[in-house]
Length: 413
Ligand code: HEM
Image (cartoon, rainbow, N blue to C red):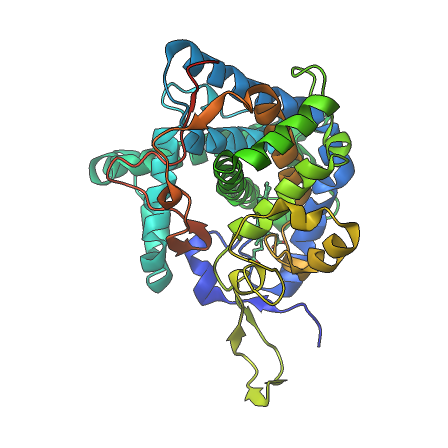
């Protein structure tokens, strides 16, 4: 049977915007949209992005140094999400939202998104709610739900940049020169003209941002917690980084970092252990199917959470424990690799995985090479990283003044 199944509209309705590639329901339409995006997410494209990406990782390091100077804890849960949002806006528009520079480390930005995600189980039952929420005049939103304004304002910014990309292209300016994906999509021959309207392209851009910032931020948060709660493994990681990177301000490219065995093991184990999308990611089967002696009728939605594989004892020993060493033996790593489902599988797998890998390597190497021996968890417990809600991605508890993962510089540093 072909693996090109439609997505299940009931499940994906809570993401809104079926005009974007991610929540596109029809497998045929998805193929066209994905094909138009794919070249911009290739290994080569991400390699070319190295300087911009590393610049943002350095900006995060600078913000951490500011906290060190004032003796304040670093709200890394938030800071990682600022960084990943800025990375994507730079990647798709060649411009940054600038959230990493904010005084509050993007707390208002995160809480705005979070208020939408907290609503997502309800929106799934009443999908019209999403359109109503996003269609309200700004002043009504300000009165009813001031927190949601950040999302609305970010979408307005993205709309504005999309409009500029379209205008530049219609005025014959070589908008593609900036390397902006949006500018290139305006002129690509891979999309028919009705797929290149302002509305469709701005929805695509907004969706790319939403798809990549929380996911990557959550994996970085998980990695930092697991490493900082395990002094021997932290020491191994720091030692490897110190030996491989003599100058902490000259972090090599993602391709060079991938050759570091322990760093790579930490990243792979984090991807496995953090699971990512907890939801079952359902697809509709076009023909009847036999599974374990049961006949499943055509039109049934089927899916499976990555959790059941990535934390499965029969595949990974001590599956609930964080053990990077399981990836150090090349033969064992080859056996285990197919069971990493964090980026999904098949024709609808994550198009941003190379960008995500580049971010994970750049940020982990930057933070642990610079501060690996100096930072400690601050008022952070297991409860702050345990996925508690299944909002597509597994999400931690929030609200009631929670701050998520925080670190502080140790007194002797
Ligand atoms: C560690 C970080 C990330 C994780 C764990 C992750 C996870 C996933 C998963 C599980 C899917 C499949 C969803 C489904 O089947 O419905 C997916 C799809 C997707 N991801 Fe990611 N993602 C990450 C980072 C990113 C980044 C950085 C971007 C880029 C902007 C991105 C953009 C997308 C898009 C556009 C799709 C839809 C692809 C399609 O339907 O063809 N993701 N991601």
